[in-house]
Length: 342
Image (cartoon, rainbow, N blue to C red):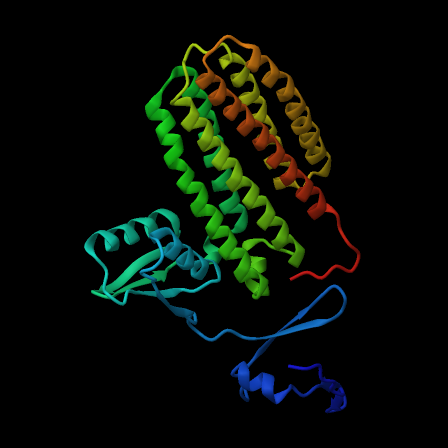
């Protein structure tokens, strides 16, 4: 709708009124007697939204799966529909779903998409529905759950490396799926919040730019999870008596401490602590350069050297992602006069 100007009218001697654009009213389903929600913003503008009707309006879509593309390619299309907020998604297969394909779809949906459940199926159709209520799981709740899993994974990955515990290492690898699930959930929440100011407040997003900041933060956390997974994978292949083991443990504990400080600064919006985390992360990356040189000079097999350097690279990347999160925390903690809030 193009910009329109309306004159303010005085009615009854004390009430100011303004007419609503009829095109907008029709598209929004507004009729006589309905209520509108008015939200005053910091710059004195008003946000006018229709009151939501009783019962949630379900957004539905049909997704035809291509036989010319792989399972993962088709699943990415499903993830995209999940992220943009569809509540009901019908997966369609022109030639019908084979039993193994149907089983895999159900398993992957349960494993990767929080809140999505299979509610119906036929030979050529699988119906998925989201039963998740955003306000029941706030942004801070999701980030806290995500961070707790990462902390647990990190500690266990270092322990698995130290003890040569293959089962523990495999468990760490499997837990990375939980990180991915929370990442997708949070992105879905943030996308919904951008178009729904009431929801944004309920889940804890105060300003529009915060939504972008949190998107960067959770992506960094998801990447940290990937690097912890890599450490666990490499630990299964390493010689337990490697002379580099002590150095890896030290760097691992320091990286864990930086991550803890990073999360604390984010939770409290403490910009000084965020700066400390950035300095610690930079110092760790600098220290790694010297350790890498020593590893290359150590007497160990080429295979072990490759695994050790990969682990150290992952620990360095974890520190860098912590620095990225801390930088976003500082940016989000900086207030702008007259800034719009949801």
